[in-house]
Length: 128
Image 1 (cartoon, helix red, strand yellow):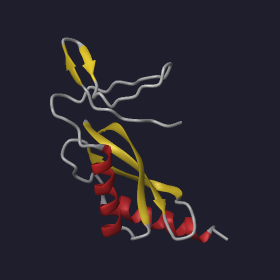
Image 2 (cartoon, one colour; image 1 turned 120 degrees about the vertical axis):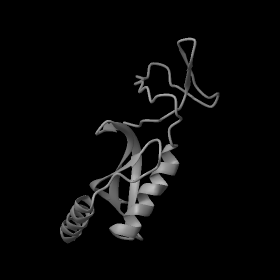
Image 3 (tube, helix red, strand yellow; image 1 turned 30 degrees about the vertical axis):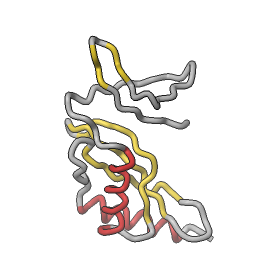
């Protein structure tokens, strides 16, 4: 299932999406009210997540497509973590990384970094 995110603004009780929004007929739409501040673009948040992964976990990791979720009362982008490498498609996921959807702050603990390293190592050891 492919999910696409669009940011819109409510005016007079109706959601106004950007003119580039292409909504397929018959598709299901979920609405999350984020407040009066714009959300960080998914692409920007994914770059922040991937940068955190490279700096704190390992350089052969990447963040996948993001999903907006509420985490401890904050809206956040959640990204699956995949192992990358030459000659093969990304493998995983081995965990996830959260990025605050308003500030771009990584919402990841040292324990999660250790778990990602352990899961990645275990995953790699199962490959032929």
